[in-house]
Amino acid sequence: MKPIEFVFDYHVNKKISLNKIYSGVFWKTRSKEANQIHEKVRFTLMSKRIPKKFFEKPVVIQFWWNSLLDLDNHGYLTKLIIDGLKGWVIQDDKRKFVSAITHAYWLGNGVRIKISEVQK
Image: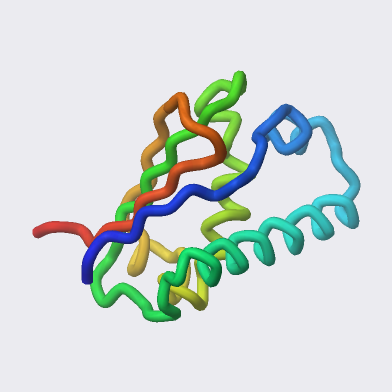
């Protein structure tokens, strides 16, 4: 399957950082944020006309961030975005389906995401 690449229109800030979660955000707040991100990811996939079709081989998911956060501080939002991809382009986020995740910075708006099958 061809790689899928799109920009997730989301302004990343310290409110959604891993440090913020570590500091003790109430579970109900985390649950509400998670549901909102999942819905926004799926809406983005629909609006970009990305078909609801699973990759057949394990994938690598690449993220490019434009924020002031350290790269490792995007872990929480990474999880929420990947959870939003489940059931649409990946069956699950287990190691059988996702073999690697990478992070880098970029100067564009939103979060750039590329999903591609592992090349053997």
